[in-house]
Amino acid sequence: MNHTIVMIPGDGIGPEVTGATRRILDACGAELSWIERHAGLAALENGSDVLLPEETLDTIREHGVALKGPCTTPIGGGFSSVNVALRKQLDTYAAVRPIRSLDGVKTRYEDVDIVVVRENTEGLYSGIENVITKGVITSLKVATEPACRRIAEFAFRYARSRGRKRVTAFHKANIMKLTDGLFIRCAREAHEARYPEIEYDEVIIDAGCMRIVRDPSGFDILLCENLYGDVMSDLCAGLVGGLGVTPGANFGDDANVFEAVHGTAPDIAGKNVANPLAMIMSAVMMLNHLAETRDDPSARAAAMRIRDAYNACIAARERTRDLGGSLGTSEFADAVINRLDA
Ligand code: NAI
Image (cartoon, rainbow, N blue to C red; front, side, top):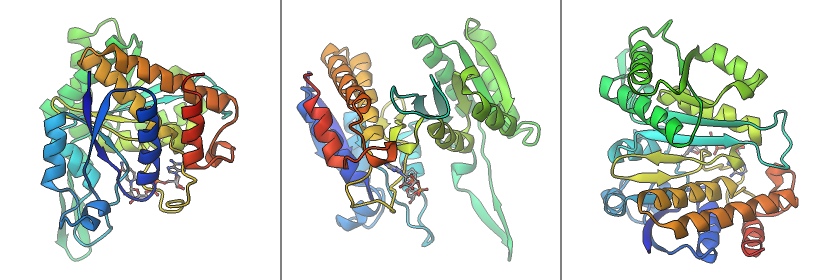
């Protein structure tokens, strides 16, 4: 079964990590065809006068699945975030970021296995900011019942389908009584009505951060509104080796975009030193999604081959320098390809 994937190389380290990932996907026997489209600065450089061309959105809508590198939103100049806009336009309302310890990557913690489920379409990322008067600016946090309900449903459904035990809602409803209050009320109601076998609890986000860095083992699925999910994703990435090893997926009813948690890393862009593993892991999530939704066992087999190959590389200390190794981005991809049949 052949799947058409929309490839968005992105900016900064994006072309390097997506290029490495595509080489691995092409080598692993997955039956994929590629259509390249642009977003971010790359869109402007390719002749668009907007950061997020309609053509890019339409192509993702048509094919349903995209693999995306990170994109830069220029600061100032009236640009709104290209990533936020992409998620809203495609209504990819659920971001899923699995955070797992990697065998052989030593951190302060062992056996971390957490999934951040982040509401992707509203909250403080609605981008509604107003200058009230000189020196006084407001930013509006939006919580709607349908969006709170569907992300809660998603988190519990995800927990059930993956055999996970607990959903913990992160909130600040003691201060934001109405917005975060709505968020946890929807989570409670979903739990009570349909998912009684899943454990559910709530934690105020500041106390939750403290608990998670002391001992992540008590956490399973973190259910977060948009901003908290963004912050918790990077915090949790730090528990297992950093942004180079944290993949992600943005799920919607009609479109699904797979992308690493990290950004464009301008400090290391163009130097062939970025770790492509987070992007490669995102591609593995994409293959598993194709296997599940399109009933294609060969996509699952390809995902497992890639996962076994990168795990073998990490165990053999074939790594990029953020994980204490010396391989460049493309050399790490070569190492994974060499181990695909091992
Ligand atoms: P960042 O994730 O780009 O970088 C933070 C730190 O992590 C840097 O020191 C970087 O070198 C390191 N890092 C990130 N990815 C790495 C990798 N694969 N291998 C090795 N080291 C890695 O975050 P920052 O600096 O806050 O954002 C830079 C730009 O990226 C901004 O323009 C931001 O808007 C954009 N961004 C885009 C995202 C997306 O497209 N999904 C997500 C986050 C940020």
